[in-house]
Image (cartoon, rainbow, N blue to C red; front, side, top):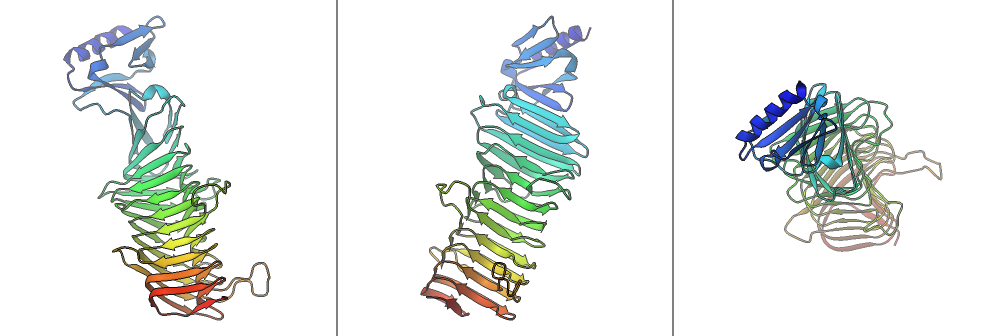
Length: 408
């Protein structure tokens, strides 16, 4: 009987379709089909399966088939969170390549290797007990549209496909993410791959287990980017591998127990710009108040050619900026360069040859070149210094109000 009713409903809908979209509802997952494909339906397995546009549905799992008066959107997945439930809408062109699991408000999407086109994942809504997991083998776009998502058991968003992930925050939107306490995950928002942030919206992160944000390849903030605010992190505010490039936007980090921004070397020394930080524009505001941590840290060199960095640094052995090798601060374009810090602290683990660390505004393990912009650092506390350089210091131009302690 259900088959007969479904047949009648489907053919009735098809007869009235024009530039509309057919929707096949199966529990919390909806598959969309363009009107041009809606008439090409095949029953199989004795009438227990229905295939449309390469998507095969078990008839007894179809709740309904409806028509939406909207244009069909290709290569998209929409996830809408509503309390303890999430609803997924997937376009029929990519659905055959997706393994989708929805349990309450936990959504898992795994794309197979045959999917070699970019999918846009649009996340919206609110849940205090949900998550989003995605894996695949091709680049993707993650659009966060006023999403408020907390996962008490793991990462709020966990992207594992290892490719370029365009993270888009529409202007005028605010997305808030938080994780639970005591998990085994690396960050509240984790990307296995290289995220590129764009759009003028805001992203607010709370890391209750470890880092607030982490990526195991480079992270880029594009010129039109809005803002990232880290309200709390048990570890680092932002933990990044390979390199970090900031071309615009703003970052505000406070209440972290680790470093503000930490850029690490990957396991492959041949990776491009491995361990580097490039700050070209935008603003970074840091409040660092833990012992032996850094506001901004990289394992290799750092280049600041524009933008504003302000930091309030306090703690034993704490540093505002720390580089593994060289530091260059200059002003190369129309964007002013300003580094302003207030540093207060004394020595961490004094007398310990391995752990002793002194408070510094800027600590450079290689050479430091200053060629334009403004540096304004006030350092107080026993043995605290504004700028300490293990290598040589070269002054070319710019305004600096503090002493530079260099070995060469």
